[in-house]
Amino acid sequence: MSLVFERPSLLRRLSPWFTGFDGPLAFAVFMLVCAGLLTMYSSGYDHGTRFEDHARNMLIAGFIMFVVAQVPPQRLMALAVPLYILGVSLLIAVAVFGVTKKGARRWLNVGITIQPSEILKIAMPLMLAWWFQKREGQLRALDFLVAGLLLALPVGLIMQQPDLGTSLLVLAAGLSVIFFAGLSWKLVAPPLILGLLGITLLVVFEPELCADGVRWSVLREYQQQRVCTLLDPGRDPLGKGFHIIQGMIAIGSGGFWGKGFMQGTQTHLEFVPERTTDFIFAAFSEEFGLIGNLLLIFAFVFLVLRALVIALEAPTVFTRLLGGSMAMIFFCYAFVNMGMVSGILPVVGVPLPFISYGGTAMVTLGLGLGILMSIAKSKRLVQS
Image (tube, rainbow, N blue to C red):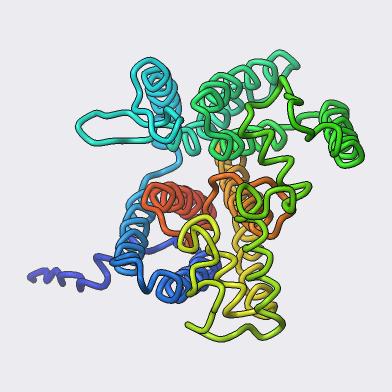
């Protein structure tokens, strides 16, 4: 009697690579990718190869997501400490002999020019999730203090570059891990109350605080100007307030239905600054209107909620905290970008995920999605 071994088909051999991919998360990303390609084609029509480069960056991010999704969370956990040390070391190197552009020292030349602060957007939540996994079942107040110090070091180095946008994203990613780890509301509430009180006082006393010659010791001069411009863009409509004013005009001119694809006058007549990068939301709003904005916001909300569901169903403390922080990274990206373009937040260099042009940010997004897919995959393997 002879045994016959049937060789599995190609589809069957490849299926393990795709098993566990989260369908709802992939659907949300697909909607955002389509919106990004449409908007980039319109807003970047006279920007050379912006559309082709944007599509290429999306393919690279997709490949990174696919590769990272194959890495088990245990392997990701093993990378947490080395990646954090590497990121902080590179930030120190930037402070010592980094490349300065437009008054900011954010880059490092290692044969190619890199921006090490981008590493911390992923390394920071990895490190803190690793720390709380190690302290599982024996958390004390001292453990949260150590986590705060681990977070404060890179955030402080990034703020010194200065890079307010990236420092806020790293801070938000780290704070979300600390909060999800079980930080008491008794410690969370006082800073929130003080923050709201500070904003209220700033609005009430804006004329005195933003008068010529007045300097705030806690912020750099350009950061102070951004806050004052937010409160009153009309104080310098052709200078510092130009971005906010033109962004709001473009959003409002879109109306309910929008002017239509490729029909945005504010965008195509070049009134909207940085229309393919930080202010691309204004270009999208002008052409697709309130309906388009609602659909775009729905896609982002669906993405964040699905990421939170993945985190809640994750099998370990490390994966739950890491998944939750990835959800908050996507939320902060979208909220801060839409907020600054709409005139409710100061202008900082934060792109709109999958919509704005930019290779480095797209790589970070691909890593975040890959981590979420890896967590979802590990959950299904545990259940089976």
